[in-house]
Image (cartoon, rainbow, N blue to C red; front, side, top):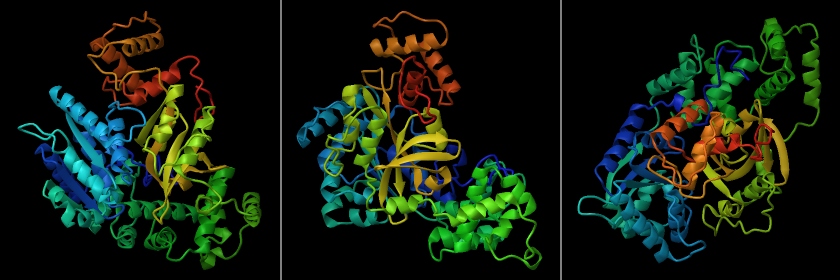
Length: 550
């Protein structure tokens, strides 16, 4: 909304994890170095702790970027699991087949152990990363420790990275977990930004977004640092709201007073009605297409957004757009996302979200058991396998979602720490249509972003029956399909032969397709590449975010 007004190409303080905005402070670089050292030394466990919003996930993403290609990674984001559920989740992440529906811990341990041995024989290493690890039960931690007993004479076959809040350190300090604690080869506690780091962080993000001259004053950033206590996530949110507030009141610079008002709303200390009126009015006016004219005439300032100066107290000539906006304010306001998520009548759990997501694919999952408290993390995903559907779980941005162009379950987190699961049914410009339980609402994407840090799960119909990713050296029907689909796109159809090998020529064709689709051109056909390839196939008939059946 405010990007064009300030001459920016995009919003610089989105909470979505866009890698272009990656900023590693000295503390983040030290944390990353500790993780890389711990993994490189071949130890069993590496521990990273930090307060909420300090950037632990940012460090984790940077770690994934720097791991060598021969490392297989299993990511567990929801560790509130039993031992059986966690081991099943690890097998799912590593694409290790196991007997469907098994509840035997021994079966899962034996299956995983054999797979780790096989991976080692192929020259591959395996790393398990567990986020929010402070929520792990002591019994589950002990089971993970026993898994790390599997080793050769030179190295461990499984290395574990535990990422969590400071409570994780207290958990590992318990006497009954001393054996695990002694195996931690690297520990690091991530601190918040210093004031100088906050200044550099804000400047970095503004420059990436296309800033030509400073918009935030030094005093404004100093206030944002103080009010956020140097916590990157809060700093992001305060700065984003400050830009919106400055835009809503026709200011060309973000000053300290604007930041203080923004922080009052973001932090919930005192909700100023005038501030809320200003930001809400700005959203309405953008939707009405009247922004430029109103800013030029000072119309936004006449709406009672903030106290007016003496020169501004005499009202300007009536503006029809302002009158319309004022009339709209008298009407009952549409419920906000906060109000909807707080409504006890609305179901925003993972089970309801999967029911809604499957409905978009024409499947009725209401009669299926989706009890996420007792089921494995991928229980919802299992329901579509009979129909040839797979789940794609990622962390990304609106850009990533638009590129994949499939409905997705978004995980939202409210300030009280509760998690909510909603279905993103469509994206139209800067407006997102969500299905939350039985409700369907359309909201500005910026409102959704306040609660969404990037995690999503989407369903796609896979033509591949074997393991993923497809990569050089593999052969079989899946490789034949890949070659045939790419050939059709090039206008050079090829005959499907089951014994075709994934050779250098096919790798080059995959890389070319990935580059066109703005994917990482590594020549390996992973899930995201296959999702886009399937969308190009005639008769795919899948739901999409832009409303056009794929």
